Every structure is written in C-alpha cells, then in structure tokens.
Length: 197
Image (cartoon, rainbow, N blue to C red; front, side):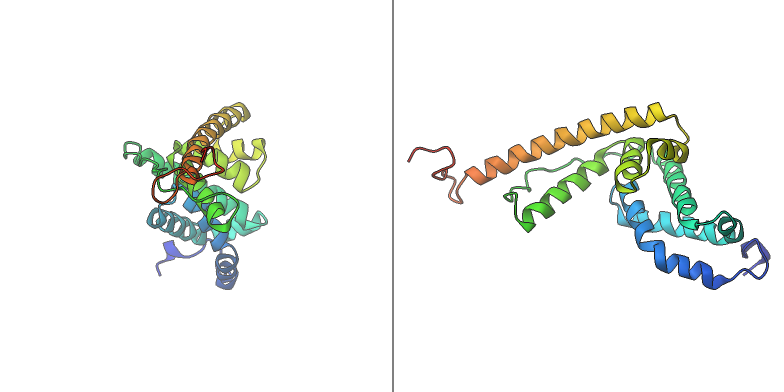
C-alpha cells in the first residue's frame, strides 16, 4: 500500500473501518441496488468504489460522528456521477405481461414488489434517487435536498412526478392481474368472475 492509499490519520484503527463495512454494507448495497435500477453489477461496483474512497478518508469521516449518513451521501453522489456518464444508455422496457399472480398471497406480494422495483428502475435517475432517499431511507425533504444538492421544491416536484409514474405502472399491472384472474387455464372465463354460466 502506498502512502497515498493509506487513511488520512496515521495509526487509524483499520478494525473500525472493517466493523463499519460488516455492519452497514448490506444496507448500503440495498441503496446502491435501488440507485442503479437493480443492476447488481453496477451496484457492486458503485459500492466498492465508495467504500474504497471512504477508507482513504476514514479519519475525517469518523470525526464527524456516525459515518453511515456520510458514506450514504457519497453513494448518492457517486451514483449521480455515473448517471451523467451513462446518460445516453437505453432504458429497458417494463414487461408487465408476466405478472398475473392473484394478489393476497405471498407470490402475489412478491410479484407486486417485483413490479414496483422494476418500475423504480424505469424512472429517470433523479426521480429514482428522490424516492429511494425519501421513502426507502425515510429522509425528510430537507435532508434529501441537501444530499442531492437541490432545493426542497425540486425534491417535491421530482417526488410527485415519480409517484405519478409509479401509480400509472401499478394501475397497468393491476389491470393485467385482473385479466389474468378472470381467464381459466383453457382460456374460458371462470364462473363468479363476471361470466354467466
């Protein structure tokens, strides 16, 4: 390890960094997965890069108190940098036709979650980041604005647009589920679901 790669405080306890990684990397990876639109390899790369940078600044980061919020902000900032570089990457279409499991059972809940996560991945990066920070990380509008480097009004408008898009996708998915529940395996409509006999 060269001197440039070492933490910024001589004698820093590497064990404290290792404990931090062991205790928080799961939560940070989940945020990275959501920020990258469920692209696992990108999320792994993103988190690895951020943890590497955090290690080099570990002394400064730990002087500020709890390191997780600081590292989470590093993660959001690094994701934003990646968005700028990958701005012209094609969006992947959301295929809703495979989701026909009746709601109310575990499989239905898993299918709903899958639709939600795929819909989240379809959103523009800033809208996705706002929803991840506001609703997954449970941050306030002010905290989200501070992390994203924008105004509270921007957070509100991005959140509103993103939620409207998620509702639109959810409605389309629910219509697909209802249509799937009404059809019997042989293609005939089932009794009790709107057919007469």
